[in-house]
Image (cartoon, rainbow, N blue to C red; front, side, top):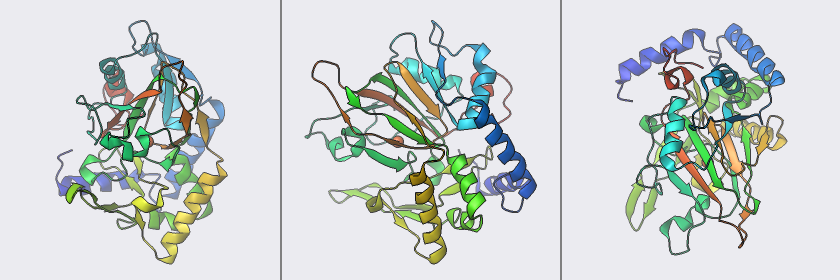
Length: 318
Ligand SMILES: [Fe+2]
């Protein structure tokens, strides 16, 4: 997190040599593309990985987890009993996730309890704390560079009586589909001035400074693809030249088309760990006779690294 600019530049140059995300490197891209599509054909994204009686992911699941994550960038898990927040964080560490982000609205332990809050609660102005639908986004797209969200985990304590499902879209697949159709537009999406998120100001106090940056970027420390995006028009100012507009329209078309979209409705005691893929949430309705919807969320500055999480020598990639 505290690397100097020179270290970051050197690391990015190293990524470039073999990166499938470098537009100059068609061979690496084609090899990566073939692997990605092949693994997705052979695996079921809805597979549920069950925790053992200690609420740990069994070591025997390491290889299947590795394959699942490289195919879809997320996995679904199910605990034996209802997890508390500390157990949830312990499980996430098994995925190599340690650098917790602290966001507005999070609890003291930096886990966010996503639930409908009372109108008087200051969080009620933010959609995650209501029962409304949430459109396509990646988490923390407004975070500055040093606090980039590379992964997040959700854990469903109680699902809503009706609705509350999630839809997911692996951002690597979005990259792949754009590169198939219009590779020239990726340059625009990787531009440092592609999006600008105005400051969040409340009562003349700046809660979050203005932030700008690319949609797609390669993270220098692990050479992974990161994506920042929101479909909410009033929280963001997009670059407005012809190429940027075409690029943005293509992103919207692909998401609307939904070719690689996966729908998941977490049941009680189920969760998702992911590399900050694109996602949204259906509106929901709580029923009086059952507990209100409650989902824990933890956001991380590091990406999933199973070798680190399972105590093996880290390769930096899964
Ligand atoms: Fe989200």
